[in-house]
Amino acid sequence: MSSLALFGLAYFFLSSSLEQKDRELIASELNLYASRYQSGGLEALIAGMPAGQKESLFVRVAGPSNETLFQNLPAQWDDFDVTQLERRAVTGERQWTYLAGKEGVEFFEIPDRIEILSAALPEGAVLQVGRSTESRKDILEYFQGIFAVVLLAVLGIGLAGGVLLADRSLRPVRELVGVLRSVRETGQLSARAPARQTGDELDELAGLFNRLLATIESLVSRMRSTLDTIAHELRTPLTRLRGAAEIALRSQPDPQTYKQALADCLEEAEQTLTMLNTLMDVAEAEAGAMKLELEAVDLSALIGSVVGLYEHVAEEKGVAIHTALPERLSLRADAKRLRQVVANLLDNAIKYTPPGGQIEIHAHQEQHQAQISVRDTGMGIKPEELPHIWDRLYRGEASHSERGLGLGLSLVRAVVWAHQGSVEAESQPGQGSRFVIRLPLHSPR
Image 1 (cartoon, one colour):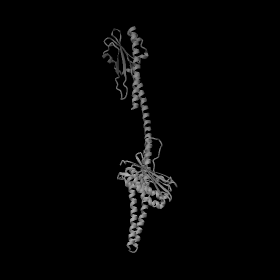
Image 2 (image 1 turned 60 degrees about the horizontal axis):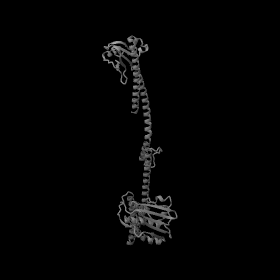
Image 3 (image 1 turned 180 degrees about the horizontal axis):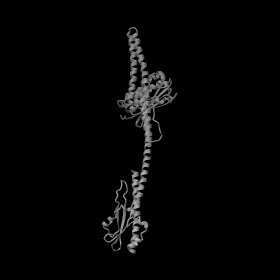
Image 4 (image 1 turned 90 degrees about the vertical axis):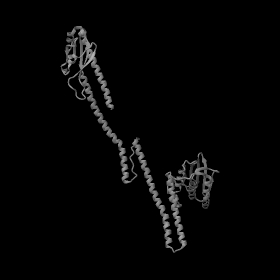
């Protein structure tokens, strides 16, 4: 459309310019012949007409009744009916008259015509001078031909460029489709769309797609790892439960033996149920579906009651527990869930702190948050293991010697997140660990 508009504008200016030049030439010739007629009459006008102009200029002198007194019509213009001029009224003022050719014109062909300028002469005579528009038509038709060739070339180049650009633009989309097809057919989530580093929207789409695949791959990997770990963790209590039952069946009938076997089965079943319930709690919290019974809780009293439960265990191991708690620190929270959080952190601290070590528990208000800090002087956590301690069923290298499910810290983070809080850990191997929990005083849930 822009090319057509440019052509139309250029064609208009060119046509107008050529028409103006033709009219100026006709007016100049008219003035010249009128001057000759006034100085010497019709004979002087005819005598002063150059031979060359006789083949390129139309000249007519009409009498008072518009009868033709003299007429010069080039031979090549015989397709124009100049007798029409005798039937047209002519005034004394200068006026333009047009004569169209007798033959029709083809589609898109510019029609040929004679442009005639009339002027009054003495004694009621009229002088008419005209030129054919054939030369102007030839120039305009040549211009049209040039434009058509240029337009076809531009369209060809544009079409080829459009095809190449479309192919280049759609290449990342085809690559994404190929990666999706590969994932669907092979089930391998390690496939990635190539990054072109162009910085455009398609490159950003490829990056987002790759990050999505990486997230899905990580989730699937963790799911498989979790299922493997659950299967392994369930195998041990179930094997013990089966062994206790088999021993009871093979032994001599004895109520005490049966009672002990049932007690062992009950203990293993309770451990298995605890693990499954904890897994469900963590999954609910991570999905934002954990139900909380919010109430006004005195955090100082809650921490004190948990510490009281673990003091005997710590004394037996030779670990000292020190607390620094305000007289009262109130917040809205689920008391049962918070008690699990503090108990899990304190249980871990006692487990991994050697005899003679110390555990410090601090709590205070910080602006609109309650902060809990649990620090121990235990074995610490390796830097490469620290990011994974919150994962479900994850157990570090040093924790394999202790009994546990690897769900304690997962549950801690899940409960804290359910309260719209945050938890972080700091640790140095051989120097101990510090866990910091921040909870809003007024939970938005």
